[in-house]
Image (cartoon, rainbow, N blue to C red):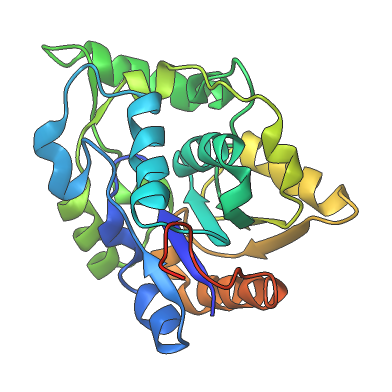
Length: 252
């Protein structure tokens, strides 16, 4: 069975995968849903110094300390900045990459660089209104395309503020990630973002990468559980037979 590490996006936490994980575990897969520093139940650790590198180390350490190999690494939204960076540092541990409406890190580029103008301006105005001027308030669920009242209320209650440094830091990508050829991009169409449109076109045109479209909100793992689980399980099938006999550091 496959090993999934599911990485949340901006303002979210590991909680956002709670509707997906039971289905994957019921199918026999191992699933990790870490919450990065400054988010969710770790929001008490939020500070101006929490940046992209902090979150990259959060996820890299999960792989390291849990002795994980042949990982299907899934990044949603901002999580794509993190997962791309992790995969570039330890490609030997990654069996497949899945992006869900994700920003794909490239060398020397920040997430702010990839935001559409309207969203970048909105965030900067919100930061300027903060007395401490370093935190980004969470958006409304409606901005993410979540239109069901119960879903919107749940997400609104769970989202937390985020350090602006995470969006401003520039990624450091060496190209080692190129060794990972099993990649899937999922475009959830309920959130308008030209970067995501460009990403799905790139995947549609690539000879070996996979492209999927879900007619749902930015939080596909919440509002399109069946479709999200289907894609994750199908990618798991493509990694069958590639798993090592034992994880790194395991007893013989």
